[in-house]
Image (cartoon, rainbow, N blue to C red; front, side, top):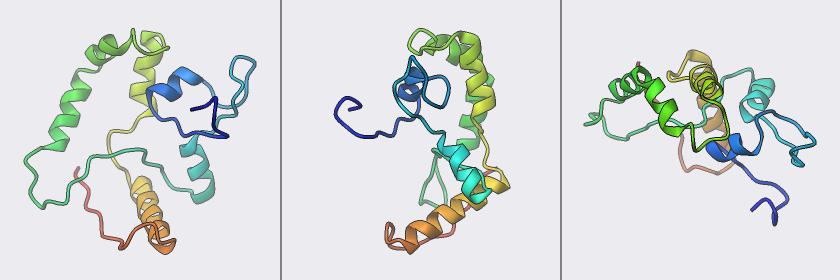
Length: 135
């Protein structure tokens, strides 16, 4: 994709493998941007790359419990993926524990609200529904 396109959006493992630091370097002939940093700079709000969502009022999955269980096993998760990602175990653990938020704080909620308002305003979604957040 990067050989044939002017730009690309990489998230997760592919982005981590491309470059460990934003900006152009001798090792990385690509200009990179941190979307969360750009969003915060323009809006003053937090950025959410991904989250679990459901339309159901009652969900059979307790997302809070699933999150908490994953956090209790962070060392096992690091060990499982360390060989597949171009980061040391220490870097991977720091990334998972300092770069990723596992709860939506007030600034992130405001950022999501603005995101959906802008998506609606620009015709990207048909309606803007209120979001309810789990703890």
